[in-house]
Image (spheres, rainbow, N blue to C red):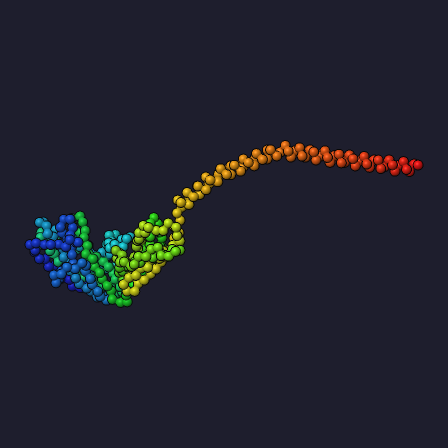
Length: 340
């Protein structure tokens, strides 16, 4: 990896220092991008093609009454679960953090190193130069990193925004849209090679028309290339009864655009349960009365049915007896006629 010759630290003594509030810690010391022309910078920005070496400087400010030893190192940047900026604290850097080098005195000459310790006298600013060597095989696009300073049990960082020359691709997707407890949850994924500041628009259409319409607004998210974040959108007044299609549209600079939707059914289950219980309470006495009436009617009918059956049986037996008598009389008459 090529390294540039790095000049030695230029230390200037200042009688009074006003450290930027964003970078200052509780004990006063801070690390910031060097002002250069006198105007403060929120971060270090560098741009170059693969194989080039870039140079810049950070300043360590010590307004205290005692000397301070600060250790500086390069680190890779990362996104929090909610899309905030953070620095990777575990493992060795593999991206922009690994390309940052400082100058260290070794056997009478200066050599590049990934970490360096700087002693800053009281009420003094130490300007620490560093180099950013872009490997020949670096992929085009954004490679965010940071320079982390540690002293007195705490750390502070200066953000480094490196863009490697080449085709830039702005792309993202919206995934896993769902509604839980009055909040619309979703995931954003940066599918391109540039850092994105996405905008979100929310729309929900029901059976009778649109029930939610929020225009595009910039999200408090800095989505790094290849990162995934989980976000939520409040919906405090959804309809009580409706079939709704919730659609999310996300856009970002560079032409990135993505949409995703999910169907949601709103049913007032409490009211449905109350109506069901009311109907059951009304129907129960009617069922009991009908059953009681059937039992009473069956009991009163049983003796009458039995008596009718007996009467019919006696009548049938009488008819059979009469028929036998008639047949016998006819037989006797025929016999008497034959004998005569």
